[in-house]
Each structure stands twice: as C-alpha cells, then as structure tokens.
Image (spheres, rainbow, N blue to C red):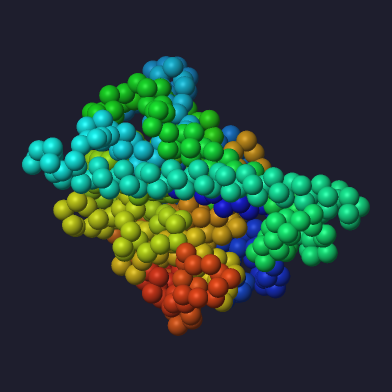
Length: 538
C-alpha cells in the first residue's frame, strides 16, 4: 500500500507546542502531533499529552514491529530508537539466540536471499493469481470444466477480467501521462521565454499565450486543478506518475516477471519460516523509513522531527516489495515480530486479492494469543471497504473477527468538507477510526525528511498512540488498548457534512457525515487516550 501521492518536501522547522496554526495554505510539518483544541489543527494531541499529562511519569520501553519495505536503521532520527536483538552478535554468521534467523540485529528481511540479493519489484497478487490459473484454464469453457473445478474456474474468470482491466488502465495511464508531460515540457520552454524567467509560476500561466487550442486546453485544465507552486514542481510530479505507470506494466502486471527465485524458498510450503536474510533495510526503504519516523523518531535529539511515541524501539521486518506483498511473508513477519517481543505491529500495506488468507489468519490469531495489537492501513482507493474487501483484514475465513486489530482511515489537516482525505478508504462497519494522513513530514531513507500522504501514514500515527499507552500503562492488554483508542476518539466532526472520499473535490457532490465513515466516527487522540487509560488502569 505504498503511497503514490505526489507531494513536495517542506523545509524543517520546529513547531512549538503552544502554536495556533493560522496559515491554512500548507500543513505544518508537525501537525499530526498537535492538538485540535489547543493548536486548532486536526492532530492527535501528542505534544499536549506529554506536557500536561505524562510529564514526570515513568514508562517502559515498547517494541513496535514495522512490517514494511524496510527501515533505514542508520537514519539520524532513528538509529537511537531501533530495536537491537540483545542475544544476537552482529556479523558473526551464527544464530546466537537460536531463533532460526542468523544475524537478525534490527529485524529480518523475508524478501532476501541467502546470497544477500533482495526482491525490490514484484507482481500484484492479481497478476500472480492470473498467471497460475491461466496455465490451467486458458482457452477452456464451462462445458469442459470438471465439477470439482467449477469454483476455481469462476475465480479464474473474475481474475482474468480484473487483470485485463488493470492492464488496460495502466497502458492508458502511461499514454496519457506521457502526453501531458510532453505538452507541459513544451509549455515550460515557451513560458520561460515569454516571461523571461527560469522558473515559471503556475499563476503566470493565466497570462500565457498558447501555441494552439490543444495546448491552451491543457493549461486551462491544470490551472483549474491547482494554480499554486511552479511548473517545474508539477513536471517533477508527472515524472513520478509516469514512472508509476511504467512500473505497473514492466513489473506489477507483467506475467513474465517473477522475482521469487531470488529468495530461494519453497513458495508452495506456506509453513516454511527460516528463509530470507538480515538486510532489514533493503534496496528501497523509503516507505518503511517514513512510517518508522512517524511512530518513534527521536523526540529528544533536537533535530528533524518528533515521532508520536517517546519510548519505543522500532523492529524492522521487511515483507512489502514495490508491488503486492505475499501472504506467506506477511504471516512470517507477524510471527517474527511477536516472537521477538513486539507489543504493537504496524501494517501499512494491503491488496485486493488474497492468495493464502488462512496462513495470515493463523498469524493474526497467534498475535492475539500473545497480547499483540495490530494496526492496519485501510487503503488509498477512496472506496467503501464494507463493500470492497482489502487484504489482510480482521475478518477470518470462518466469519469471526480478530479482537486485536485496528483499521485506520486517513485524515486531512484541513478542516471543513476536506477533513477525510479524498483518497482514503472508509467503512461504517470496517474502518475503526481516522488519523492524520495527509502531508505527513517524516524520515526518509538515506537521511533527511519529506512529506508523504496515505493511510500508510495514518496507520503509524495510530500505532504510535497505541505504543504510548502500552508504554505508560503496561498493565493494560492489547484488547483494552484497542478499546481505549476507540472510546477516546475526537468526535467534533460527527454532524458536519464532508466530502465522501473518492469523489472529485471540485464537484462538491457526494457529501456525507464524517461519523458515517468509520465505526467510531472519530479521530484518534493520544491526549484523550491517556485520560481514559488512567481511569481504566486504576
């Protein structure tokens, strides 16, 4: 569930605890930690909680498992908060703690081979399913299918249709974005000459003389969507979008691409565990590093950002490639995190088709039996997940539901009708609560910081809140912490009509109550959660 929202990084500067946000043209970089009442921004009240409720109180260190693309454990804001396996000696090639994983110092990589190579790009699960079923059913019709295969054949038809539609969308997207990019590159060249500048501001395009009607139509279209910033910035965004679609056709939807041989496991053996390598950073850990910073970036070093939680250790479990994660890897990642002491696990990933849901369900139940709380991002498709199931999910194949699971939608920093992020999935029965997930400024791999948006960011905000409660109130169980987070949400938006996610904000159509977008109808609040945890723990 990696984000593809093309947002620029903002310069780092401290946002004080008492500051009231009055500039509504851009998000303050620390907004997810600020307070909706004190700071007038839709954050979780972390700074207020530390200043008013937690100052001087003792806490215990909580391990948070980050199942993701990897974490840059050498980042200046993360190196001091990374989990370090106390029983493992780095680099000696020996499984010192006898847990089945050699040299797992900061976590483990289920996407690596024993030779040190790593899987970076992957298929969508849709592609993998279609490739597998196509071998068996391609060219066959209903009359030639055995009775025992009828159900699987119906799945094949569904998967085939979905795959072909997805591939067509990717090819059309690649063509459209390539045309838009080329047109705007030409506009940029001519506009620089016309206005005598090296950097064309979007607002200047209102006076731009187009070369023909097609070019003029393109300029008017982009000005309708956004007249702020620069044309260079927009072109950078288009390059990222272009790469996104080209990656889809080259890797995600390519039936001839299958990198699993790099790992060297027996993929059909779902119970197999001891594969992978200790490189829990991996070839591209941007997503996981950003997630880790939101949860627990060092709050005391006076550099960079402050994570939500102040006494955590981040355990990196790499299981999410650039493509869809595999159920076997997800299950093993959950089990690894649980067995090595994680009390909260963040899962900012998801897909529309499962492969082996039973093995993931088994791991979720194992986490529940060990009192571990799972926090999961709801997804970025702007759809109702009561009707459109995303995986993994809290509901097991037998219809029962996990009691240690929190599903999180994404909140905008802007108030009014834009409170729910336009891309966020939602669900009155399925999504538990919302959390900050737009323009979240956090750590990036290789050092430095940047803004990202997605439910992938909202989930670690919630995981950070959960970690704080487990840290300061260690007597509370995972189920109690889940209940506290849900009971203490801020509901000030419950009667406000807001834009329903997935609809164009420009149309002004499809309004709904914010309270109808999730089970609780509210936004996670560390400040409120601490107040409730104090009562419950007594």
